[in-house]
Image (cartoon, rainbow, N blue to C red; front, side, top):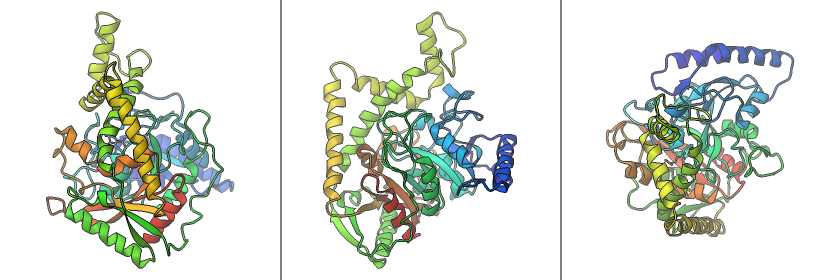
Length: 451
Ligand code: GLN
């Protein structure tokens, strides 16, 4: 298996990987073979997996898609990586992503954009663009991603694969290079919900090294896959189907909803009135946390350091000027601004209050329905370069994924057809399924019944 995928990766022209090391991979594969021969197996022993380059790994470089960490090799594994190693998976390498996971198109990577396998003139989505492209192009059967405001769900939608962002606190953030700590959440991407359930079984678990990790009994996320969904109440939020939703996306999503009705579900008209506010709220809170998290990249502790400088301050300035890309700098500036004296109350505190109201909207909705469904993004994947000079256009396209993240709820994306975009090419559409806290097994069941 490892040889098969390494062969495909070597022929890859999508730029999905940032680092592969076939010798290391094959050594892990040999160890997995031995383990299998001795009968010591888990559901994932010998299965090749690739990690978003946000998870630190002991043997491969961990770059976060940034020049700042171009040659950085971590002395330890992220908890997620450790879990997979213990299960006997074989690491194929590290996957390209937007710099520090900031972006929606994977064009913010220092290592260059990733191409969408369905149409190489389109973006794969972001920030886990390399992860989604690798699954879609069959460069890996399983990958990890991270989702702060949609980075698993939106690239999964753009590349026609399945991805799930679990409830905040389910998957350890230890060793996941931090972007916005109150939102960051790791999760799997694969071809199907069934595969995702097996990956989630390995990823989820309490970790004392992550202060926001939740303690819960171990669950088997594949336990309900085959349950009937007769009588399931699907909330369809009005605000997800308004102006701005492209007609090709709307058509594919509505067709999926009719399929669910045929499977015995009922559609319930619901409202998530603060959906629109999730954009300004997220783009205040996420940069605020990013500005604090990224202060550690100072040229002293690790990563890039400027070679010529006058004094310590000059070293900081040059290191960060050279090491960070434009979008990262934009977020640091915005974050520092909204946290500064005189603006904190007006922006940051206000955003935190609205964040609470957004979470309450979901709780009100879940009194009327079991899951919520809608589009993942307002359009199919756009052309490479089409929005790269327009950060606000990128932010606006996150409208349907941000509120779930702000509320800490689980959400997933499954392929539900194709649109044309503006180019009359075949570009995948994702159906978003949102559940209440810790309803991952339900989401996977609902997704599996459709697949
Ligand atoms: N597109 C969003 C952003 O740029 C979300 C990214 C993410 O989930 N990591 O912040």
